[in-house]
Image 1 (cartoon, rainbow, N blue to C red):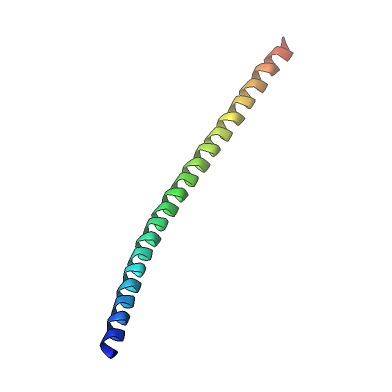
Image 2 (tube, rainbow, N blue to C red; image 1 turned 135 degrees about the vertical axis):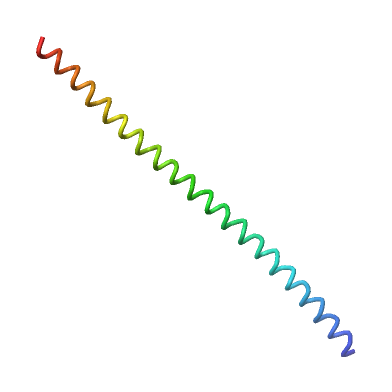
Length: 72
């Protein structure tokens, strides 16, 4: 009976090790997804800043043109 208990324990240990390995793989995948998400966020923030600058430049340009109309 002791041998049977040891075999059951060994099976449970193997299952636990397999579960740990799967969880470690999942953690690595999640880390990679997080890094990709952070890169996407940074890229979108940069694009947003560029668009804000372009918007500001266009506003200034339009104001300048409207100022010329006022002078005429």
